[in-house]
Length: 250
Image (tube, one colour):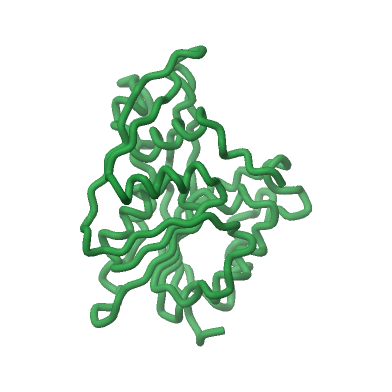
């Protein structure tokens, strides 16, 4: 399946979604403010930082990281964080932010008129943050046993989500955390109908897919807003879940 996440317009849209100010992302005062700062909230509202190991290096993996805001947020809690995405332009942008902490971009206002902006990030330089291009359905076999794995709005954008879900027991070490967020927006253009994990019952099917290796610990509703232009927005609500890896290593 072709990767649709490479256009300059979409890059600007996602840089705004991840790094834009509240006023830039939602310029209307009566708009849905509860959908702002989603890439930060998927980490902050789901992570159990009190159970992260204290005597060893804490390793984390952000799958489908887009342009990386959640990855930087995870670095607030973990020592080493790797983020991956299938989009070369998204990963290039995230790498630039690691190197120089600022990245100019443009986002659509109306028609072919664009607004200039700068994505900025701050992080502890003692933390090891890296980004690489990878397919979540075919991750390198050497990736395994992370203390924390995060995947936001990824499952229903994969051609075969079961390939990713079946890989999770190897990715998360016993006792580790899995943070997932998904609106279950099944579309044939991303996921062929025969590969959907559910239809109306996707939440229950996800539980069935993750047993017997994971136990559900927390569930929250995570609204999010993506701005297409100043008068058009996508408003969705993801199911945010935290799972604890149980059992032994596989």
